[in-house]
Image 1 (cartoon, rainbow, N blue to C red):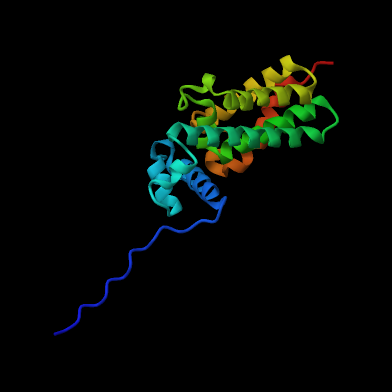
Image 2: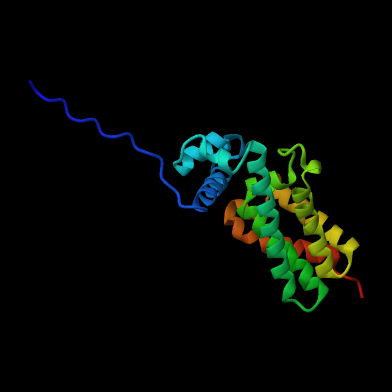
Length: 200
């Protein structure tokens, strides 16, 4: 009687050393968000992408909203760092404005789905999440401090954010449809210069 071939053992989910699981889950979530959109971002999808059991994400994220909050907070932190870096070099205020605008547009065009998550209605209870509201408020504070004028900072933020969202939502074309997103920071800088150049 012919022996049946031994069954191959079921493939186990990849084992992660301490600290690696959270990063694997985060990276999987960020990838799904940008490649497939927010509608595809579930804890089950994150587990599948990371190659772990469906229960694994719950070790770090008690629910779907907790995952969204972490992604949004990290997005705000990355954007703030980019703004701070862009505003540090120029000596004059106009160049700081355009540098901030370019950095903001670069971030939004590179991370369109994350930008929508950070500022959109997908996290309905954001007012009850201090770490999220503080991270968002820090953007305005960073711009205001860089320009040494909180009112001007708010005006610049409103202008560049509005422009970024029009681009993210594919409402206007600043040349990116033909030339690609690489042109957007420079186009944003030109528009901001025309808006905020001080008359002598």
